[in-house]
Image (cartoon, rainbow, N blue to C red; front, side, top):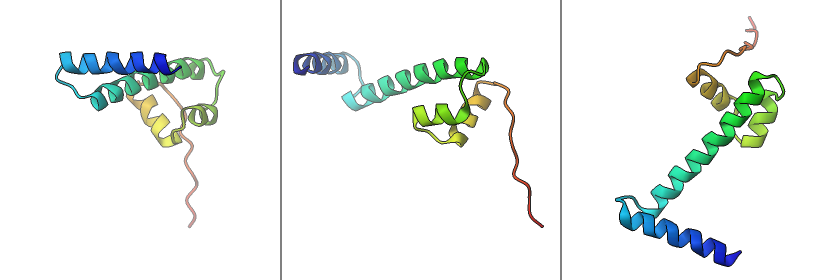
Length: 87
């Protein structure tokens, strides 16, 4: 395991030297890429109604508001439930 991690570290350092990015910026971009990959897989299941919003937000460890913002950004239709106002 340690040798695999050292290979990844050396690859990131080599890429950082070749580009004008820091190692942290590279890791952030990788994190964003893999997060979007998982989100897209979950959105496919959401469209097929195989997975609920609560399950997806629990798996991704995000709030439901953020998930609905992702749905709006990707222009996916969904139902908003409004709480009734008390008078």
